[in-house]
Length: 314
Image (cartoon, rainbow, N blue to C red; front, side, top):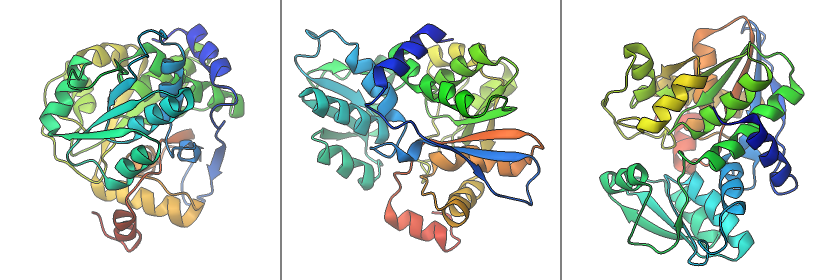
């Protein structure tokens, strides 16, 4: 668990630098209970990643930052680190897998970041080892960095400020930094609230780990849900997730596309695949409760969004 004092300090540190995103109710009379959307797609970079990236870099040693910053990302963390680096006048390198969406890569470059494309295996190695020696600069891990997770945890504090007694909070799961951060904040303030992670069925190692009681590699297929899904868990994140999460769910690509479609048609919200995972799980299970769905980002390629809006699953 990330200490609540660190999350509260992060909220003060980030005040005025990020958007305090709204929590809005999704009007859906046919659904039991009440669904709420935490709209992190409204951050300046279109993703929650700005919170963690800024919190981590603002606390980093100035000497270590002299050579700039480096991260490994499928796109959104790269934008967060690039944004923070631009604010502080630092060079930035973002290592991305070769399937990363062009929408996100173009955004990184607009923010002044240098994109380095590598194979998925080399990208995962950089994440596993918290290093990419080929590039100069301080490595900002996209997931297993306590300062990143504390920044993410500020979302949990904002949710409880706006809705005092949610029954469930559903959080997209990529590497675990978002869900662990949010769960740490929520459990510290309101332990009765259940917090669950949500993954795509095309790569759901956390769901499998909760079912088996231990982590093991799973089959993974690249999909339009590029911000979530993986062949394995980072060992440190499994230990952290076990301590604060109540479980995990996996949803299909069709269910995820349907959630993207519903968000666009009913709420006029553009969500990327990972950003719609939480709502997909809520729609699937239909709990008669107060459920908060984290819409983690909205950076989706226009072509994929167009496919989804006409009823297809990319």
